[in-house]
Length: 215
Image 1 (tube, rainbow, N blue to C red):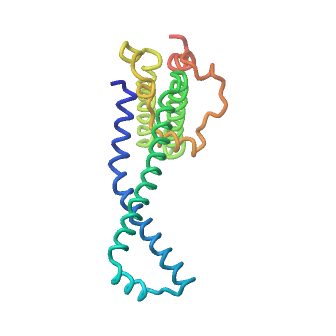
Image 2: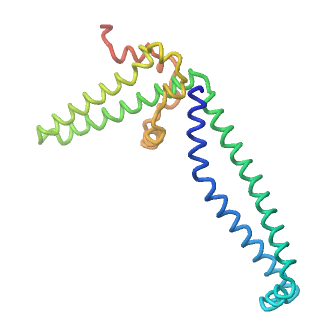
Image 3: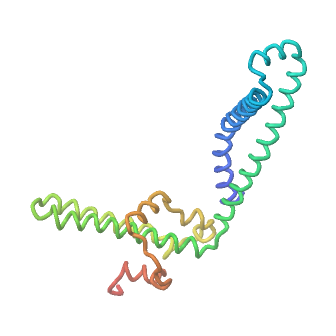
């Protein structure tokens, strides 16, 4: 089984673990709304109140039982069709996302690790320039944050600059996986790179960031 198939299987398992409760609740609500609509319509246009329905139910219980069964089956079929449509759309959307070309994931990954590095360095430098003037401890903490950010960046670019054999055959959706929630936060804070030339996000540019002096 391919990595994409494994990911799809995992996501479908998560969907189906929540699906039965949602389906049962939806069917109960639709049955209730349908019955309420019928009763309200009959009362508004034919003046048939709840006492009428109670007496009628007592006189013809079999007919009401069969009508209820038909109603439940009809609503179940409608909900099943709706579920199939939604599930098909979710699967198609996920498969399309996983089948994007490798270059797309590489560029997305480069953007993320650069944005994350800029944010981490900005936090450390801000701490060093403001709080570090009066407290030597904050200077040490800021330097530690810078070192940690650089080390994390070096570890992240390994799959871009020095991929091993397993990296080359791994599905790009898995190999270049990023934290989407962190990506969203970075963009909301203004760290989006915008329209950057592709050459500025290439592996050679990242290599120059690691070795600016050509060493």
